[in-house]
Length: 315
Image 1 (cartoon, helix red, strand yellow):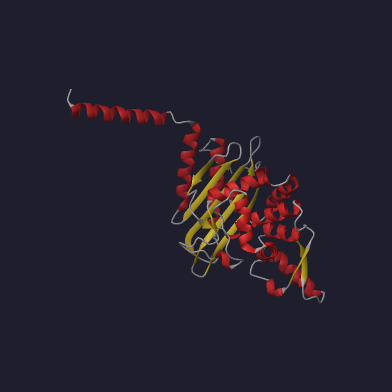
Image 2 (cartoon, helix red, strand yellow):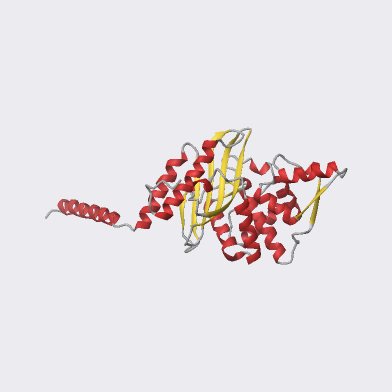
């Protein structure tokens, strides 16, 4: 037998073995591969980063897991956790009051703006809300003024970064306050995270790092959050309990960001965490319905991944 014949036969046998091995890939591997293909198809001309953390075993799958994306308001979930944890450990109490006025208002702050307007109607120049009220407003309605007030009371963006590091997240970074922190352009690592880092951080916080009472409060605030109704949660089965924190960016010369971090409790199994970050690549002021629909489809993809029934339309 010639060397050339042996080489050709070896190549054929190796190819056949690889094909056979691929046919015997585990169902989980096949579902994960299909999930990744579905995410790639959703991406369009933008960038879609998705991490799905299974809290049962700590496994993570998705797309662009370790690429950086603009945080936008998803940092407020971590900020709320920080407020709750510090209070539980004897730090600033949730009922401690914080004063603020019209000069503190920024573009997105429905709860704090209403408080300032109510104070003005009483003839007062300043309003007051408690730490707990500010944290709840930052989480449930994405109140940017509330987030700024809390950050200034707690040590600024650097304090939030230290909190992330304390809980094992070496990548998430906050550098600026609202609304400047939403202006993230290509190559700028300020105010960014990665899908894997955020999913794992939230998994640690809600999976046991927070004291039970703090965890329960944060989980309930996430469930009460209304800003993500058209995003990942819309694509989940109706019997899956879920709570989230959105992040949204856009503006003059800035591509639209449409993000969602979700805690999901499917019936009869350990929770999932989904961190979805979508940079549409389109310069505009605000996400379109179609942009949000991409994240709703991410939710459907997650449901198919979990159920293993990829062809089934769940909603």
